[in-house]
Amino acid sequence: MSESQKEVVRATKLVVRVPSYISERQRSTLVIVAVDEVGRVDRTRNDEVELTMTPMYNIESPKVKLDKNIVKLINGEATVGITNEESDFVKITASCKDKKAGLEPYTVLLATGGYPFGR
Figure 1 (cartoon, rainbow, N blue to C red):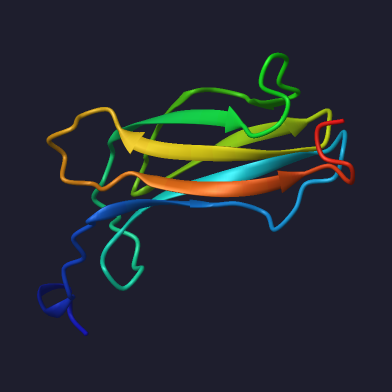
Figure 2: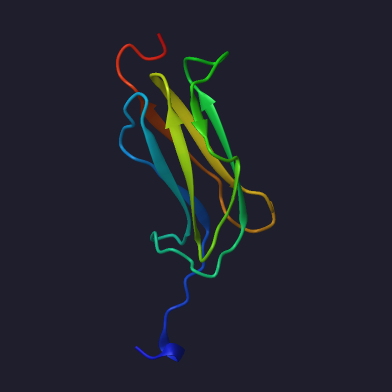
């Protein structure tokens, strides 16, 4: 397919790709992407994305931490480190800082550590 025939990808939402599980005292990486309705990454997006994380159990003194709360998509993709010091479930939401950018926010629930959660 020539350059002029390439299909244009237009992102409609953000997606946060997380590991299926993070062990206690482990560091991992989350990947944030801007995708279209079938999941293709829109390599033209360079938006700022705000990340919020809410622990489900250890609310007063969370032990799961993101390296940053704001990341910049570069060619439709960004990464952020996550560190886990204690078992918990955390809800992570990615939303575009520019509310007019046309990207739906995305929320994912991530299990960290082992049993019992948050105790």
